[in-house]
Length: 74
Image (tube, rainbow, N blue to C red; front, side, top):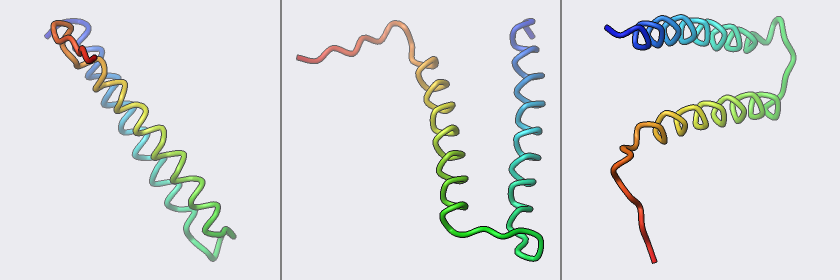
């Protein structure tokens, strides 16, 4: 494997594991015996997470387009 591929795999695995752990910690906040929240709070949290995930996915999809394809419309 190339050095850049090795670095990508290393960082992608560690960051994904950390993100999953943090999402699980957010899920722990659902325990009503320890925390007080309403549906507006939950909606804000998941709207932000959805937005950031979509944004990151777009960045990957945009970079995966081949440079030889040309989108031209009149």
